[in-house]
Amino acid sequence: MGAGFLGRFLIFLGLFIVLVGLLLTFSKHIPYLGRLPGDIFYQKGSVRIYFPLMTSILISLVLTIVINLVFRR
Image (cartoon, rainbow, N blue to C red; front, side, top):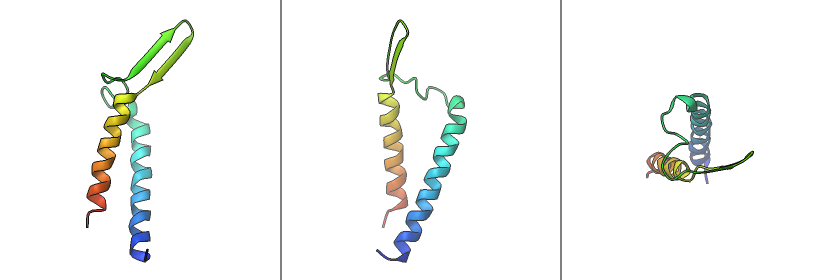
């Protein structure tokens, strides 16, 4: 692991933090995010359980593609 790898890692980490910040800032404006078919929502009385399964899979797929494009050799 040389300085080149560390530099690329820090750039990727910075971009990742910016993307997460943008996602959190504009998440209300992204249609269907958190309400996709496959997201699990259970409510009974005052108990609410929400597990965004499909949203998590979609975000994981997008991040996998981005990471593979960034670290392609």
